[in-house]
Length: 374
Image (tube, rainbow, N blue to C red):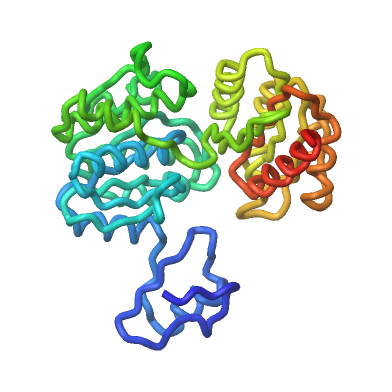
């Protein structure tokens, strides 16, 4: 597939039988979407295309939920592949050692994550649906919390079998599912030691799903012990005069767990947090929660908001930094890296946290730490 940078009606080929797959962030005024409409070319959202793809497989297994979709689906796909099941895979993150995050498999098992942000997860029909949790994240983009929860219930009802993690919300939404398997969030103490609590729970959910697909617990656990994790999920980037880690947390629930895991995995280190708010709508909705959690850092820097769908909002990175007692960064990536590096001391732990382009920062910080070491 030729790749074009930028959006232009001329990017659409003239071939017959064309199908346009678009992100929900591309509206009707997008030049390629508009050109498809003008020519009568079918145009579907990414989640609709996923539902079409899943229907071509014998056993679709889809993970939906507010947190952990990528880690659970990647863990499950990894262990099934290790055990020779040759699953089809479509994962929304990068797994170290994989040269791609999608694979057709043999047409039998198909493991994918189902995004709730635009409601398209409700279009999937699964042999096994997996829901680890339901929060009100993305409620603003689907018509409110009631609509969000209704979409999750539709996803569940379209699943022949449902595996979900017990909570007040999930029990209310899924307790009447005729083929639901309810698991508690309690993970055995000896399971995958040395990983963050969220990571261990996600892997435990993947293990339980594998058991429902006919894999023995011993086989699943042995395979999961070799899983390298998903990139930007408590990922160690450097360990020298200072330690640099990166995490994808962008919701208060995830941020709280990220900081807790960082403290547990690196006891005694001074924790320097560099946080990037992801979407203005999310920053506005959870502003007070973000501010309260971020006060737990020993030093805090806040990167400019990664805007995603909207370019401005009622709350800013400067507002968050001021409320949480941190420093708002701005300017070039090099300038922001200089500001963080200026406060670093030997033995510090720097955590770059966010789901946007904050990934640009760790390599620059590592370069500056290496200069400290010389």
